[in-house]
Image 1 (cartoon, helix red, strand yellow):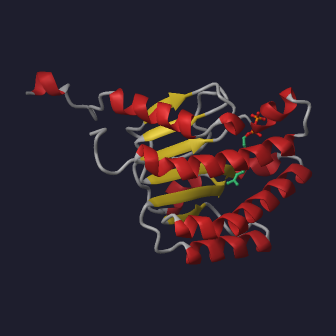
Image 2 (tube, rainbow, N blue to C red; image 1 turned 45 degrees about the vertical axis):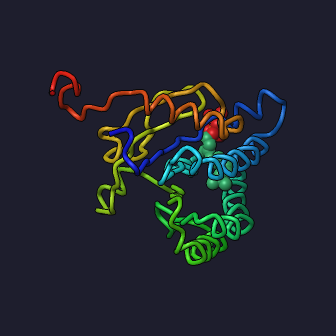
Length: 211
Ligand code: FPP
């Protein structure tokens, strides 16, 4: 199963604030470094034969953060979309936003719409950005819920935080102490290698016993 031709990896990108704090920098500097890690990871994904990548960028509960940090994150998302869209399109990446759009700033909604239109034909990697996202909300709204194969969480915490609850029914879970701004191609490849070494049984028996 783990050798199947499709591989959906989902990542809870955690640790930006602590990464910045350890360097005596403001939290927003951690988010900016986190955006670089997003760039590196998206670029590296096809090399690890990842076909779909879902990134948890902003949860419905993240609105509780200080208004200045929220505004900085919204600007960062819009800037990422504007600057990265040509590269995403050129590399065959199809971008899709999952989450509510009705509470987002209008310039961000415009950047999302433009990015989705410009990348609609991408067939190499399906990149799903979860912004103002709540898994409970998505389940209740009856949106399409594609199975996740591998769930990665950085930053040392070991919980799902309302991310892809239904889709992770049989996901392999991979937790790493690496802070998100330090994540990139090598860390993704290591997680995928561990995933491929695991035996997925989906409630059945090991292949030898079943034979
Ligand atoms: C969690 O770290 C991270 C977030 C809430 C924001 C995720 C945003 C990015 C990775 C920036 C760019 C994203 C895109 C899509 C361009 P935290 O701040 O909760 O870290 P902490 O647990 O160390 O405080």
